[in-house]
Image (cartoon, rainbow, N blue to C red):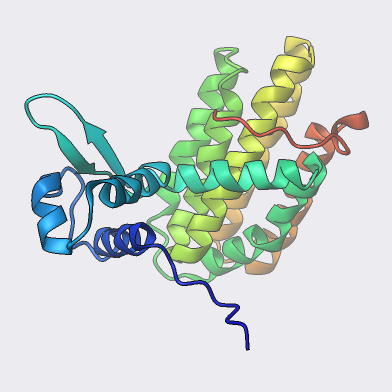
Length: 252
């Protein structure tokens, strides 16, 4: 019977072993792996195999090969922005439209705000209110180009306040993708300052209203309000053909 399971290459096994040590914290960001000659002896592998393992880790942005007085493979911090970029590329390849990405937030953000409203300790709302003030400042200054980035910080702060690491990661990724579209939209679509001010002021007031519902522990009102907010935001940014336009991935 033919064996359909391929044995991983030695370089892949070595790369995976180093990756696990980084994830477990056995190798810290900024640490250097031992010199190539030492690793070759310890692992019993050739230089080409070791360098192929390094190449795999470089592609995953887990190590950086440096040259100079302190040369070698330096450990990098695992970065969720890389995952966001990869998922964005995958969604673009799948011809995912912009509205699809916006509507995905309805799958987890209303749940988050419902949970936040139910928490006894509401100290986190100080951070949310500060994010709201940052939104208002950008509007007052007419800094409409940076408004989407500040709004993205508010959305992510909601997930951070709840403290569920899985939802925090999902929020980070989706928020990045939404922000990518909004930056591209602003560069592509010419809107008057008055139009942007009106839209962004409504968004700011909506965020303030949400924080008030959370502070008064009104979970139902917070949830329903945020569902409406997310739906309205989708309509605002996915106007005309923008909603069915295929998402274009890039690093903001």
